[in-house]
Length: 452
Image (tube, rainbow, N blue to C red; front, top):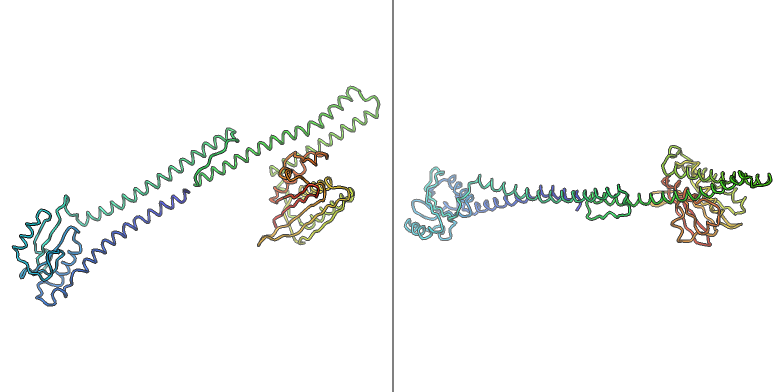
């Protein structure tokens, strides 16, 4: 149970319990009022007999009967005639005339179970009434009204206290258990135990935080593995040109080339490999910049239609040179403006066009589509780059945006494996989305979704 729910339950209990108990007390009081209402009124008693008391005194008698203890019964007599005016005892009926000897005999016969008292109520002013009171014998004397109120408040307070203790103990144990789980999990992550799953049970807010920590553990583990792959990829891609450069430099140092033409050829190879190294290092710098968000300060508002038209122009020129057919289908609003780093985003589309051209055949078709799409009340801009080339195997699609990953078909082509990783980083860092659909032998479609 969530901690918030437990606290709400505690507050509800603090409100509901007193209401229930006070309602019960009110019902008991109301029941006594009903008893008072059942006692005949002054007019009902004295309408056909001599008025031996005042109406005010009779109301006092009625109030006394209503407030009496459940263990007490009362019979009211006319002192002069000993006629029963009202009785809560089954043995005495209204209108019955009693003899004092009969009352004494009744009291003696039942003295083992009851206390009896016959008295003229002292609180009456001018009255000829007498009351015969019967009380059950108990171990404790009847409680006064003050004692009754104190007992009622004590019972209510005790119930509320017990309820609070149960709920607070439950909340405390839940929090303590959850914090312990969270502490142990944090210690394991701090020690680098990313492979150990964090066991999560329950549903309170701290357990939810533990779930978030588990997700963080997985993200850190993935990032660590990604860094390891990154370092291995960098090491491999740097080592190859460096080994060639070293080999040719050693050959020149040892004067292995016997003529100037060969030495010139070796120098050109060294220069070419140095250029390859520079390109690779620039690519790595771009990846790091995008990953760290260092370039965000260069964002500015860019007219999307103008930008895509410029992208299409460069794509058309590249396709013409490399004997590909280029088709542009652009239908964007003229006033569409988005924030971006224009240089990096141009690099992104250049990489996509480069891949489309590289992995399509001569006379193949490269198509650029850009349009506005609506999903409910929200809209977005869609940019697609499609080719009808060799395509990508389905089992390789999930890995194509990984650093240094090169699919089966791309291994025959020159490249570092950073192109699509850079594309993905640039797009994601703009809070845009990129997806890919492909089928081996039929071509590939990259789709970029831009929030409007």
